[in-house]
Length: 473
Image (cartoon, one colour):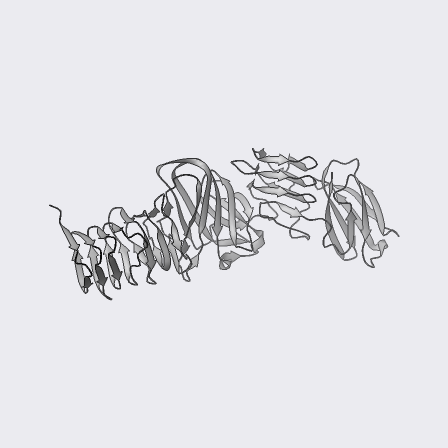
């Protein structure tokens, strides 16, 4: 016959000190206060139920081998001691729980939270165990480096999804100085089976094979029971993770056995990586994405090439444009070149407005002449190198830009025209014109017989040189 230990006397204060084992189900009834004093160690081998109106305060250590069931209508502050979930089978936290405990919470067995998990103070350490939040569970409080979940071993923080929607995993690492690096998964479509989950773990370390400019952090994302999905993902890092030049870092999906996929450039203002339209998960990190040698695969999504912008994107193997619920729009007056070594895939969502220009071709000569770090350069976070014409050049200016075919190059300042040499390169990097200015300070050029697209103007004056891009409509 199953027995119960019931603390039922109204307004009763029960103080537990020293070592104490409970071998039956424990129920703290309304008006009852259970207090585990400092340096005390209490082990509950069966369920611990806190009825509505009941209270428990842990100033020592409470080890739970079964479920913690909180029937209070709101979150319960369970003290400043240590609460350890260390059962040998799956454990549940029913209803709401607030962690306000600078000493933290250790998960010793796979644990499920069906209500709200409020992180006020303290670190939840998972080790090799999983912390699963049910479909209606939410994270509240103020997650930070001092109030977060640490899945930096083989355990994961997991979330069960009732359907499409967004969830932020309040995760980080406690290696040395604790660092908060949450992950947001926003499912925009998919089929969600009963008992599904998407899980996150991470490492405060450089991913093998990254180099030059990269992050000393990577995230592992898994899923089970979620099929046919599209997911937009965001990965938060800290400035201390950056090695090299932050603006050169792109979000990469990395795999030791497959070509890496480059997604969006990092947002240097918010220190975030993003990858949109994911149909599968894996390991994600930051790595050099606009080096002299392009990445093998580049996926471009949710991008706009606006009027007056000239862009170039490349990959040694495959370029993927839009797809899986994402968009790629070239507006009237915008121009983009796509260069890949083997394949260019234009997926649903790719669109060119009337007056826009998008040129894709297979070549082993990539975006050339290479544009980074030549000024003016603007990276808008989608994998392309983007240029704004006629902004900062001090040697010359060109107009109109874009041009229907005829444009004027005008020297600036006191530059002697006899010292000026001009080269014009075509959209594949071939020199189509070379000219020295003699006494002229203005020179008209024609691209009327040339294809529409991007051209490069290179001007040399003595030891100085500058480059500008022009688009022929």
